[in-house]
Image (cartoon, rainbow, N blue to C red; front, top):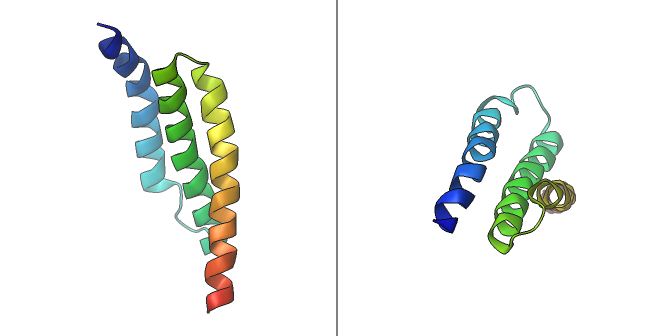
Length: 83
C-alpha cells in the first residue's frame, strides 16, 4: 500500500516534467538546453529519491534541480571545449 501512495504522489510531477521537456527547449541555445535538461532530470531524481526515503519531496526536487543544472552546464562546457 505504501508503494502505491508514493507512486500516486509522484504521478503528477513526473507527468508535468515530461510534458514540459517536450516543448521547453525550442529556440534555446545548446547551453540553455543542456542546463535545463540537467535541472529537469535532477528534479525528477531528487523527488523520487526523497519520496522513496520518506523525506521532503519538494526539497529533494529543488536540490536535485540545482545539482542537475550545474551538471548540465558543466557537461555543456566540456563538450564545447572538445570541439
